[in-house]
Amino acid sequence: MGIATLLEEHSIDLPSYSEVSIESGRAPITLSIWEAEQDTAPTVVFVPGTMTHPLFYSPFLDALSRHGYHVIGVHPLSHGRSPRVIRRFTLGDMIGNVRDAVGYACARFPGAVGLMGSSQGGVLTLLTAGAEHRIRAAFPHNVLFTPLRESLSVTRFPNALGAVYPAIRRIIAAVGRVLPGLQVPPGFYLDIDKVFSERQWRDAFFQDPMRLESYPMSFLSSLFTTDMSALVDGSITCPVVAFVSTGDPLFTLEYSRLVYERLVAPEKRLVELPADHHLVLNEKAERVIPTVLAALDDYLK
Image (tube, rainbow, N blue to C red):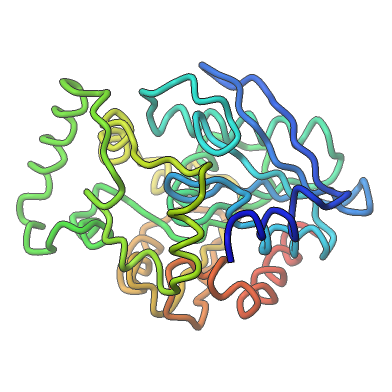
């Protein structure tokens, strides 16, 4: 299975699929759109994971659309099909992209709007929910709260460094200021073997011509230093349904529960998906789709 097969069967060759370009911050971004049959259907705005794009999740997003949702997939700044005109960007730029995609969804479709993201997209989902009050509910797959020293468990750095985690964050911030354009491959800070559990999805990612091969240090620095107080200070004003795989080797269940306990929202649920995969929306989509759809239906329909 390659990225071309994903696109042919679940996105670009479908009559319900289209793309639009919108202005967002410092550069235009592309949105992938799967339209439901009913114009008044609710909308799910979807945010992809590290260095990839929504088309990588085509089977999952196609399934959401066939169930009766408009789906708007965000190609963040310089990702996927968005123009690659900005090489130095930050987490804040991507939060702006997500908010602009929500605005587009609200303007185009009359139904309720939910926000969902996977992995890094889950992080962006919660941070956006803290500032964006037009969404009915937020559905992050994976949660992260970088002030916790246990956040080292999500990186490839050893947990034994937890005692000096504040110093590590300061060092990363300093490097980001001095060398913002330094390009960092994902393997520098993520254990790739924990990201992928199945060879076909690993191959699809690394052979994908639309993926990014690295992030600028400006982004990595912002990932560790962005103010995440919105997750715990009541800024989130909508329900949050967080998904985690029980055997996720990257965002472990123990860490996810730790972040979830601190999360402040009017209503929150932690849905534990029975799988030993991180990329559960890709590698185990058929298994988890019914559970995900049930949660979406509870809050958006």
